[in-house]
Image (cartoon, rainbow, N blue to C red):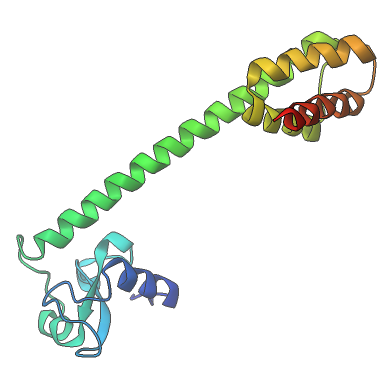
Length: 176
């Protein structure tokens, strides 16, 4: 059964293909564009964006339910393959950044808990410290934790430690 292509996906395919027929190179207003299945639906082609291409009505109707022979539209296939590889690279970089951020959060949490003897830190406090790490670096924040705990005491509320550390950060910003 044919699943309709959403308007959002249709527009995304048109934009990706620069509003140009992948087969003949024509674009509006010369032609009306449609989205074509590279592997036809009748051959179990899906609505996956890698199976969809911008086509003018004439090319789409001429092609009909038949797949294109191998080798036709090769530049479009190469471009889509390259885009897919780039997306994979971006996804891998994002995954690595997320893992690094989680490791940073864990390190800051472990350090704070180790210095204060507490078993946990409020998530909002941990987020505030990690934001400061991004601005001032890990060494500064760990040092400022030591200063705050030394000044206020390990048994003080976490929120008071964070306020003290934020005060140090403000003073550092004011120096600039």
